Image (cartoon, rainbow, N blue to C red; front, side, top):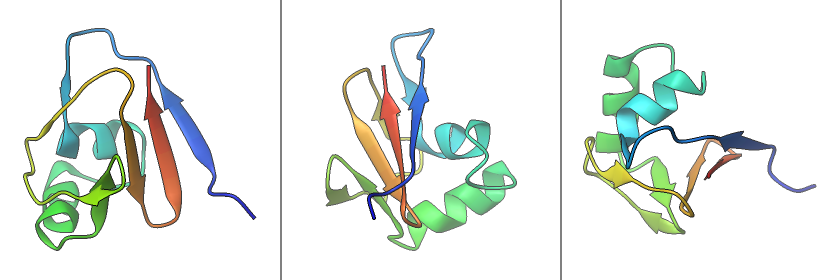
Length: 72
């Protein structure tokens, strides 16, 4: 079964990774999101990302706990 996918419509040039996880509801809080990123639990475009404030832009995808966020 494929990963559940969420499409996130970006209204600015970028969004910081931990904020994206919080806004999409995959993490309860910014602190929880930062902890998940620091714990190497998040992938951006298929690669583990440990920078909490990594800039996510249109065309990128984020994978976390079996869920994919596609940024448009």
